[in-house]
Image (cartoon, rainbow over all chains, first blue to last red; front, side, top):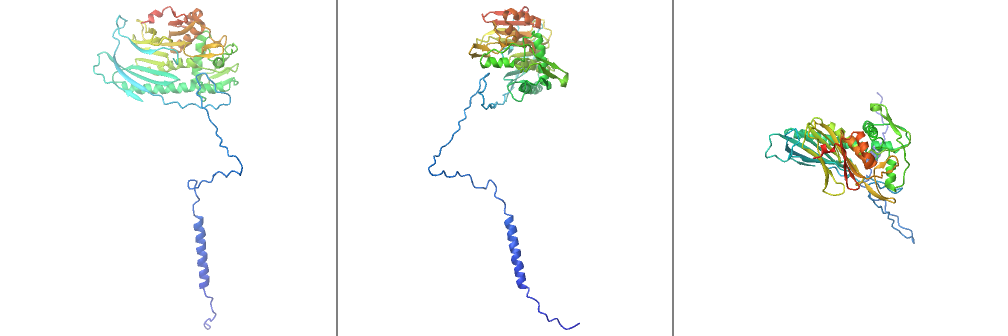
Length: 124
Length: 316
């Protein structure tokens, strides 16, 4: 082998410092990118009314909605929006009774009878 | 939901259990009643609830007051002259055709526009003839229109529903379906069940009580009532009602305030009762006899009560 290599090597410390600083900067950018977007729940209201121009009159507009219950046979005026009234859930009633069975095959005077239904005009 | 189950203290020797369900559907009252063995109450209640659900489903398909009903869809485009019908509407329209035939054309479900015209302002609509028919069988049933008519099943549907629901209760020895006043009944023999006919204008007054004759062999029958005293309103032409005369297109001018009919089926009784009111006291009885009415009571505007021959056998 020839003699000892006497060339001077560059000092590595400044380069290491630069790389460390670069790594820190990269981690910082990644961390900032991971910050979650603000959700709608967290958003502050942004629809504050714009201030009226000076001298302008501010009028509050109201659109009254009138509800009319149609009677049977009535029709809504032209252009009116018809909505169906929510019908209540029908109430179901179940009843049980014990009764004597008809005793004879012929109708006899004084035989007990019971009204179990009424035939009437519908809706009446 | 309320369930009341009274505990019987003394059970008679010849006893039966009656289970009754009442609710609202079809725009009116529904009442179901069955007789069963003493131990079959829970099963009867289950069956009645199932039948009530079926009735509600049928009514939702056949009403003109729901935009999504089969009938409303049929009416939505009257210009469509050839329309496929879903099974429930097909069956109800088939029944409607039969009722038109049984009443010599007096009962006509294609008069919706005449009725709406009568409700709106009393203006007359043109007299017309029946302009629709049915074709095909089963699930291929179609309705053919020759004119852009619209339909209103109204009481015709209620009678049909009462009969169809009663068939679902065939397992019980006796059953009754009261579809808002149109009543289908089946008994195994003589029964103590009666059907009252209230006076339409005098609260608490009964015109009659109807009951199968003493020699009733058992089977099915129907009782229905129609009239002009409930569905009435004022127009520029005066007070009027909902029963349209198919020959004039106007509310019928009639001297019959109310008709109650007993027939083999509730649907037939309903159609005949309506026809009797529309045709009046002179022509009505002939329509009733030709259509197969077993008994009928006509309350006239004069206050008189007119009974079809044979009706006395059904009177208490």
